[in-house]
Each structure stands twice: as C-alpha cells, then as structure tokens.
Image (cartoon, rainbow, N blue to C red; front, side, top):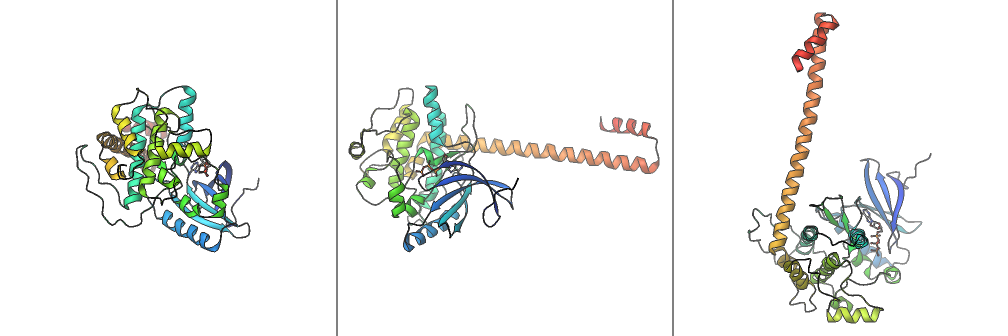
Length: 359
Ligand SMILES: Nc1ncnc2c1ncn2[C@@H]1O[C@H](COP(=O)(O)OP(=O)(O)OP(=O)(O)O)[C@@H](O)[C@H]1O
C-alpha cells in the first residue's frame, strides 16, 4: 500500500485525531527522526497580508518556546495552492484535560486533590515562563523564597485561550501521579484573533474568558490567570464556573464574577482559597502567576514533581546500566568462545568452562 506523505515527503500522514476551530488535526511521523507528531492545519485563504504576517511572526515566537510543560512547536509549512498553513508539534498521547474531566464526571467521582495541585503547579510553571520570559527558581526545600521576576521581561507571551481542551496529558499516570502536563495552542489565539476566519469560525462558548476581555479591554497576563482559575474550578466541580442559557446571560455572570456554586467540601480550604484568588473581577486583586507560585501547596506539589522526575531519571539510569551489563556479558561470552576455539578445546569442555566462569 502506498504511504501518504506531505508534499516534501518529510512527514508520513497518519489518521485524523480531531477537528478544531481552525481545521483538522492529524498524527504524522517525521520521517528523518521517526518521531510521532501532530499536524494542525489552518486555512489562511481569508486572511489579509497583515494577518498572515502576524501569524508567521507568532509561529517564530512559538518555535522558540522550549519548556517541559509546553507542547513543543516543531515547524510550519505552507501549501500555497490550497492556502493552508500546517503546524507541526509534539504529540501528547494521553488526550487532554477536557477528556479527563469528562471521565470523572461519567464515573461520578471527584478528581483527587493531589492530581489537581500537580496539574496546577505544572500549568503555573508553563505560564511563568511565558509571562516573565524565564523559569521560576528551582526549589531546594518547600520553604525557599523565590527570586522575584525581572521587571522588564523579554518575549512575554500571553496564552489568551486557556481551557481544559488546551491542557494535554502525556502519560496515564497512576493513583498518585498525573505525569507530565503540557499547555498547547500558545499564542495562536493572538495570531488568529483579529482575522476574519477566526471571528467567523471560532464557535466555542467563552466559558473561560475574563470579564475585562469580554468588555473589550486588552488581554494581559492576568486574563490568563482568570482562565486558569476557571480550569481549576472545573477540575473540582466537573463543570465550568459560569454557565447560562444564552451568551448574554453568560457574559453578565462573568462580569459579576459570581461562580455558580462553592467548591465541594471534599476539597481543602487551601484549594478553595487559591481558586478565589484567581477568579477575581478586580484586576488589582487578582493574583499573578508569581504570587500563585508562592502558595505552600503549590510549592509542595512542585517539590513532589521534582522528586518524581528524579526517581524517573534514576529508574532510566538503572535500566541503562542493566542494558550495558547485558551487552558486556554477551561480549565476554563471545570473546571467551573465540579464545577457546583458537586453543582447539573440544565443544563439550567449552560449555563446561562458560558455566563455571559465568555462574
Ligand atoms: N499536540 C497534540 N497532541 C495530541 N492531541 C492533540 C494535540 N493537539 C490537539 N490534539 C487533539 O486534536 C483535537 C482537536 O484539537 P484542537 O486544539 O485543534 O481543537 P479544540 O481544542 O478541540 O478546539 P479549538 O480549535 O476551538 O481550540 C482534540 O481532540 C485535541 O485533544
């Protein structure tokens, strides 16, 4: 059977895994490195020259964003005839947070609090890099004070479209660990935000949009904090914080900032309080990503994640050592066989010799 490839023959095209506002998303294999990736398509036929240039500029910024908790953006490519832009990015094999929330809802179970803190801590680290252009300082102990971020951060990136569907999971985790979580679709909302195509195709309900953005004020890093608060709220209650029968009602609820219900008693006061500090209509009262990273539970989660990573690295190292040991054993056996063959010792005694040697 003929394998389907992209026009340069650099990628093998596999099955479609979904469709978003901008077009289809499919799995591909990057043939030179044999790496599984996803390809997102964006039809740009409706964009004017300026919008196209903005999209390219944004792609350049995204390709420079390297962070463990951000979906890696590999490259982009045009099909000029079909007027489609293809974005190639890291494949996250365990679905997204929207699906994980739906799973808990179906099972009528609460998401474990530890899982929620672990997801929050990783999203905060991804957003810290984007909002401040650097990484938060490593924690030696959970009581370490974090160095404040630079007052003049370079390359600030605001996500602008934070929602559970843009939070990806890379391992199925287990009862105590959720694995590595990655934030996707960074900056795409900005690049597409002004385009006619985005305005006409973006049909999602703005459950996670901040009141200031709904009121046509500019996006700021704090708009991402609001949306993050809505995501954490949804992990706890398994539904978005503001729901309404129609768009106008939803807008009014968000502008008032009054969530539909408190968090279930199942969750700690600390979790309820951090959610409250994010879903605040008054921008001067809303916590920044830096402030959220100071929370003692967030620090504890960060430390636990660091230790988990350390343990994973140790296990990998141990496996590598075992592999090397096997290779060395095999080489020693071969060498031994060559030596005995050269000396002309009969096969029966050879077997005896290996056994006594490598018992
Ligand atoms: N990097 C990725 N790895 C694995 N699956 C992905 C990746 N990016 C997107 N997907 C999956 O592809 C599908 C479509 O994703 P996409 O982000 O385009 O749309 P969406 O988030 O559903 O909607 P919207 O375009 O409105 O944001 C979703 O099921 C999503 O989980």
